[in-house]
Image (cartoon, rainbow, N blue to C red; front, side, top):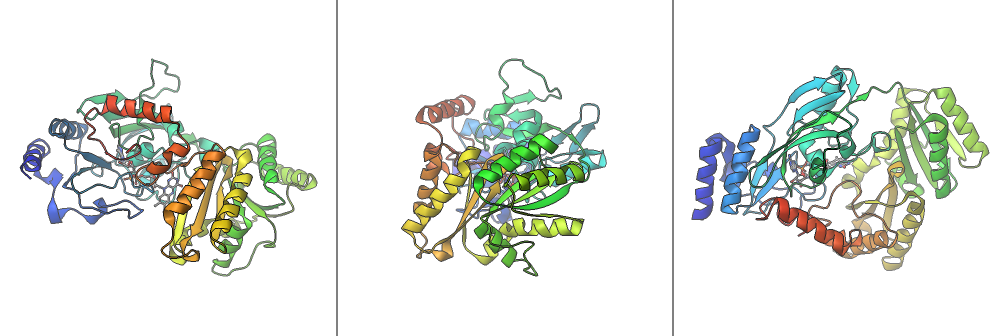
Length: 458
Ligand SMILES: Cc1cc2nc3c(=O)[nH]c(=O)nc-3n(C[C@H](O)[C@H](O)[C@H](O)COP(=O)(O)OP(=O)(O)OC[C@H]3O[C@@H](n4cnc5c(N)ncnc54)[C@H](O)[C@@H]3O)c2cc1C
């Protein structure tokens, strides 16, 4: 492949030999992301150390029409960082570290390859909270978090990654460096270009640096598990809590099937309350405990809550969270087909019912469980493929679920992005005209289509 060899030679000359890895020297972690989807050894892996390296690499690849796949921590759940054998992977792992913490601005400046956990620790050391948090925190990189507009555990209180980004540095496909770094909240100087790159999954530019918002440290939190009579009560309880004690730190809804499964998988499977209720909510609040107790009493009197456990120690709070964290056991105990969708909050109960009915009608006796960050309008649903005829009809199930999402005006991707895995279902949530406008944006920033081809739009 003389064309590729020539490009690799130019890349070695520009970045240095050690920054261009090929063949057997390529670590297998560059083959696929957390999904393990379609693993492939890329033609090379680039390991730039500076923005100028990224700019030089993109300039060379753009001139050669060589396709590039940006890679962060490879924890993505949509196949966005998965390369083909003909692609060159560009890993940000060596562009790593905290540049500055500015306490006056409550802002932190970081390189894109810094792990989320490192940023959380640096913020804590400086007396702040960096509120983005997700299970992959030890491996995912902030560049990947920004490129996927990651959600996670604290969205209800602090928003998505987009809400935490003050400024970015981005390298365009032709090697131009856009300095969009900024520490201000108010900054209305024309189009806010950084927004295009947040959630663009490496298809519009490579994120090299970021300035992020920090939050004050929350005080002590209280954990509360409530049993609810119906879905409408989940929404009215959330509104009551927001009115009386402020937005909670977490508001996690579990349908009965999920709750029973979570309890049965505990080390000592003792339920904190009866398993007979249709819905359970796990709520965490930074409000004073007495005020939360008052709100709970009011909710019980109003019939929104039928049973409750207020954690009296950290250990008890931890034990309640263990039920919700049963999702970590899914890959070990079943063959899960996971969905990450969002819907208007008032529709989520109907959606869960509709999906359950349609799945049961099509594959009687199948197992599906429902849970989610309801305060964020985000529902996760998992179908156990072991409970279906083999080979499991994955595409048919996806089509069934995403069709229902489209019918109720929801989104086929709440927080994981589109990547490769949801590309064929994007039309259920995004109109033809809007997809055309997305393609125009792509053509504008990357006219030769070298950046992460085939992702999001195909
Ligand atoms: C256990 C676990 C729990 C998770 N929990 C959550 C959760 O609660 N919420 C949630 O939203 N996600 C969650 N995820 C998914 C995943 O962690 C996030 O999508 C994360 O933001 C991906 O970051 P990454 O660095 O691993 O990116 P990668 O997987 O490496 O890449 C993801 C996408 O971003 C692009 N990209 C990466 N870096 C850059 C860059 N510097 N510039 C431009 N493009 C780039 C890639 O091309 C790809 O399209 C979870 C994953 C795991 C494994």
